[in-house]
Amino acid sequence: MAGRVAGRVALVTGASSGLGRQFAKVLAAEGAKVVVAARRKERLDDLVAELGSDTALAVQCDVTDEAAVVAMFDAAEARFGVVDTVINNAGMTHEKNALTQDIAEFRKIMDLNVTSVWCVAREAARRLVKAGAEISARGRIVNIASMAGRIIIPNVSAYNASKAACAHLTRSLAREWARYGINVNGLSPGYVETELTSDWLKGEGGQKYLQKFPRRRVMDEQSLDEALLFLCSDAAKFVTGTDVLVDDAQSMG
Image (tube, rainbow, N blue to C red; front, side, top):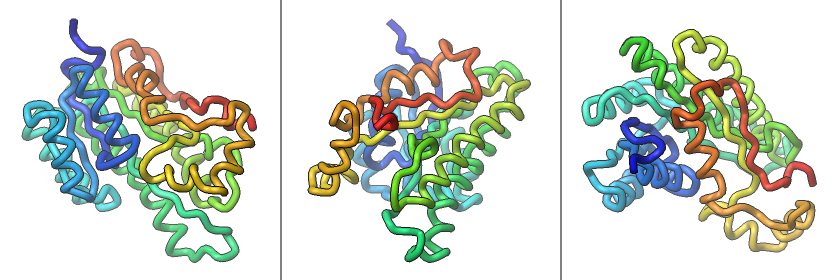
């Protein structure tokens, strides 16, 4: 039985760890050719070895660099053909009260969490449109936002603002590219335990914050698999401009 994304060429940014790595694995398992991109090449090479070189390609890329983004798509097309599915997952945060945060740090967060999302999505859409209506109608762009774009998480004001911007950017691009058949949607997770968050979540601060959640728990890296696969699949043909919240009711706490 063919997988839900069989025949697709998917690009996943921020794929060297955490959710990005998991997204790449589940897309490959469901039949897609996968291009994994991040700055840590050795991590990407390990992932390609796990997925198989016939299925995956590693591309080292700083997605805040426009020329590097163009080169990333060139490499993907040379190997697998036109990228019709994009997971804009690269992102960052830094916990600090706005009173003590400097402007360079704020700009760095906005550059990665917003500007790079626009840059990667734009390059994908340009190539889809150029490839013609039949290909562009398969276009699926999923921007990874966050429940932080809907609520206020203390001491991460730049992150909150960047994820709210990401969600509205998603809606804007969906409207602009709707006539080409390109679907642009967002996926907003709550707190997920990954190698980057595990120590904090297990510590005193994380455990205290956990008590605010109605279900007193965080999600695992597989929690978003089904929502992601739906948004990338033909089943989401009529879904564009939406932001799917998967947070286990955490934002209701």
